[in-house]
Image 1 (cartoon, rainbow, N blue to C red):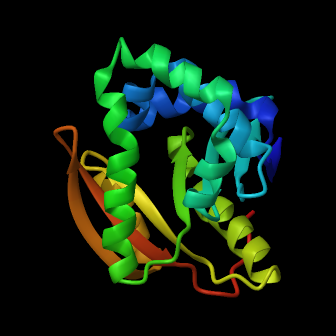
Image 2: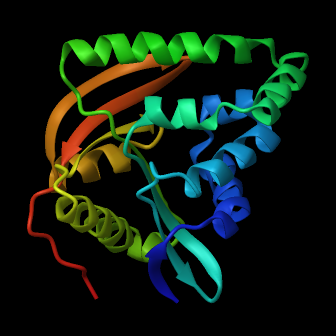
Length: 202
């Protein structure tokens, strides 16, 4: 029970929670099989700064941070992944647009000098949701600051998660904010900086 670094063994539970709660259009297009493989590779890569909150051997919250998304995509490319993408294409042809969409986003964000870190977060325990999310973010911030990296990250938030948007605006420095539409769904992109020092709330 408690907070710890995310590992490959957490993949199934995190994918299940992600699909159930966040309902990302990107994961819907990729499908569960490819999403699971990507997360497995991510947790074993040098680009993952990710944590989970566990209670009674069950993951109740997670924070996923990629230190360099473009670097991870290069690391990810393999014959196995390419074959999975080709197989998925026959079920979801839109999958072919994902790399172009990522390039488009990178070009836009380069012009405003956003740091190349991306964050995803979720807490299942509603009664302590704010505390869990704050602690997960603080653990990440402490780790990256020790490595000489600024605790700044980009967060993608679906339109219906207004409470998450309010939470981030309330407790963190918002350095950049805009909305995009991705496959008909509005997504908020917020770049936040964690004020340091931060402390774990008991």
